[in-house]
Length: 434
Image (cartoon, rainbow, N blue to C red; front, side, top):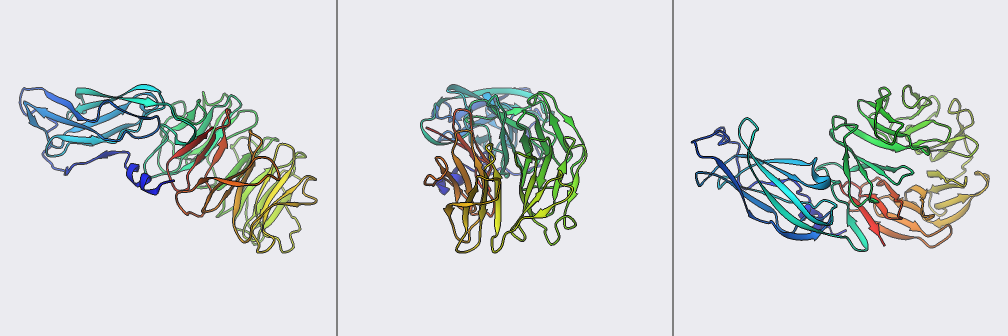
């Protein structure tokens, strides 16, 4: 991705034109003349849905023809932008500016701008318009997915094709997409008072939203939610809802956590269950109900045949296991990071024997998955998202991460085969369409 583009559009909130926090606010009436707000420039532009229009929307607030400095204004877009109300103050010349990111609607969109007095009452309004163009083939920014200063922490989907996403850092709505990742709407049923760490779906369309104030559970595709209780973790690296109904959450810095009752109670597995381990990732369950997790401190794959009560370290002589995954056909995949024999391996006999798929040396390959399009995907730390069109096919990098952070980004394939992914250390969701 063009880094200069990110710099140019990262300011999704209002630009301030020399405003200062004066104690002499002009939000109260200074005379009997009404306050007026007008658009100076920026209305009537055309751009692709999900992108910011080329020029900001510039407004001016006046009273009796004189500009009002430090007057409160609000900007609110249409469509999936409706919940994103941005507040600002006018500069000394009565103007304020807004970088308008278009919603996912093709055709006319509107941006409502309000002038608010010091009682937060809307005393005047004006509307700007723009025309949204359909996105062509290739990679695009999803519409209405951004929240300043945070990154995408999780993306999941249910059988209807609806996808859910959340961002880490601060209270916010869970967001959903019904158009294969092109745009994201606020899921108001859960509210926006929770700081979410992640969201997870089961094979039976149950949803779990992990927040600092509890595990929120929905059995009706997100229409209603219940708080099933507090969580023992404050962050996590990966999670899975097993076919047997267990929630497995791995923390790369602390422990493995398992719940058998939809998050009401949790069992913590740390150094007692895994002597010498302090880093866990990529939990999984096989077709026989055996559980697995990677101990990344030692590069060991662990197995439990009794729902996590006891764990056995699987043999790994001179093999440093970094990531693990089991597909719907019970094929096992693991990545190894040791020099010389590192790479991605596959087992078609439940882990008894492995054969090399792709060779890498001394690198970190993770987030392995076979997606609904039948293709094999994985993340390369610090570089990007890779895909192989079928097992044993040549791999290629299809998405470049913006930041060289030591972590992967969430991704999945939508119902129409759009590839949908977050970006490492960034707040954006992107989608690829053919």
